[in-house]
Image (cartoon, rainbow, N blue to C red; front, top):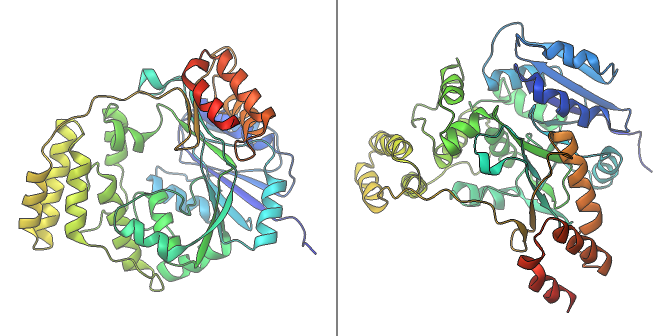
Length: 416
């Protein structure tokens, strides 16, 4: 027999982004679930953030203000100290929660007694995204599943700088608050790295035995002009946002490494921080020579500026670990060969189980409207059943978007 409904806390850390926060909040306040805490952690905003929050007049909203400017990690820690739910999730102020998900989440988490539940995430590129070609594109996963994974097996892949996917996370994933409190007791604060989303994954993998992963999404990510980390790590096009992100007084980068726009180095930094701060964490070590090789492999396709930054970091790390020769070999092995900007393949990618469409600006201009469109697509076209109804809906959807020619053969194959 089930106990009373689980209390969920949705944490939205924000700072002077009231334009997107308005719609992120709407995805939460439209939820038909009473035992919900919507925690807005305002990092001393000087815009209309408080007014936007107050407009909703929803008693499930809890507003807290840091009272001074904090780094992202410190704001996340501040917010966590105010959370009271049984399960906690962080969503960005340009992200959202999918429509009416909490009754289903309540059933899944109570039936399976899950410590951590994450999922394959849809992505909506806001109209102000820094890459014009990406604007108003929606990526939607279409295959439902619910699997359990062994944490140590997953951590082994992370330690080898492999696929960073299908992992537990506090960012767009629910984690039992008691697990977070146990980690916090060991390390003083839960977040011990300036990349809190990645750190939460490493900390969880090192401490929980298993986690669950859903093919069906319960939140939707947004990519907007406000995505500081995205600007710094992946595109390098918004120098002001990146400079602001880097200039904040933050948790010091681990002294054995050097910060650079390399996802592999950031993962390694989180591994070292977790090893230093969580006594119970298991399997956190990594091969430094492999880190050097993987980092330069990653850098090879970047711009010359980013390549040089990662090369400098690789040489620094090599010297720190007495691996100068390995660093030199990695640099020589992967010369800079910047890749051309790639564009989305519009249509359904059956390898990634992902549908990419360009949305009509008359229908969708924000994360709330994108979540409704995403939900409509998922409910009508979940391909795990491969039903004629699902296929017919999706094919008609493609026809309406002018994409049917590129996917017709695939649908013929599915019908057989």
